[in-house]
Image (cartoon, rainbow, N blue to C red; front, side, top):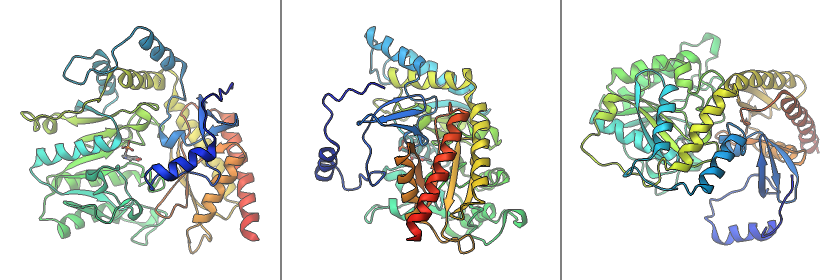
Length: 444
Ligand SMILES: Cc1ncc(COP(=O)(O)O)c(C=O)c1O
């Protein structure tokens, strides 16, 4: 791809500027940080013109593929026609109505109200507000290892110490144990457990609250936590408990939405979870800053008579991009592709476990695949340094991967849903070669 170098600052200068002027929390992936400048489909290019297969999609945000031609054309037309960029909800805006209609077609039955936001954090904050208003209760329950955003409200529900700040108030929150089959907090194995993790929701309500909660927030696959994939039966059981204690069930589909898990646009619908609200963002906008909350009518209705306003939410450009993203996902069979390619990827990685003892676990759904790295399969000691090196080795070979997990030892693979078989083969080949390289480095 042609790479215009005009006005491109040197990488060193940019790194220095960030060091001097950005928040010190702004970390970079890779020891040799990347300056990405261009993208198309499943590929991205850096400022030096080097091409990479994007297997993390800008942190699980690219669903239909980078700069999809249909979306690009519509954006260009809107600009050429001087289509209004900003309206807010105080004026009518066709794009927001089109998007809401499209979203409702993909929603589980019973969720028939939509609110838009600019991000996943805002969507979750709004869901907390709605749950509290609807129940008159204040306590939100979360899961350890969960992540729901970086605002004050969502950070209070964060299950990772790294993301918490010393003086950040955590009020009206309680945490249940994580449904992590690879590192079961109850010491059980999936084939012999009795879903102790689901029962723990009830115990936590009974022991840490006055007996009622406003809501439980759950990611159907725990993203930042390292693509922890709870057993399917977990969700129905948990929703039943939450409802018994008067709470609302919030399904955080910020990462899992948009068909990424290979069964439906929303995993909540595929798994038959009786959610009162679904929140989504990331892949929903395919790179545009937009989020949404889907709500049951009774929850939405409880907010009547008050004002909730969000200046930029569902302005015409991001709303159009999200609507066309959903269209492309359906028209091009990307959900089916996510299922098929996710299977090929998981099979290939499991095969690799025979030669690479560093891989402790392969898990996920569709194109949300986690590879947990351990120094030793018996002790399951976290291979955090190895994980960083593996990402760097893959980067050198033209493959971008993500990272997650409490100890940063889980490789996260979440490419655009349009990924093709030959690209999966390339990915597997690069991971294999890079794992050999990591083994050599750590054997020294
Ligand atoms: C599951 C989940 N919920 C919410 C968020 C917050 O979304 P945003 O960063 O768009 O505010 C994230 C971000 O990583 C996420 O993974």
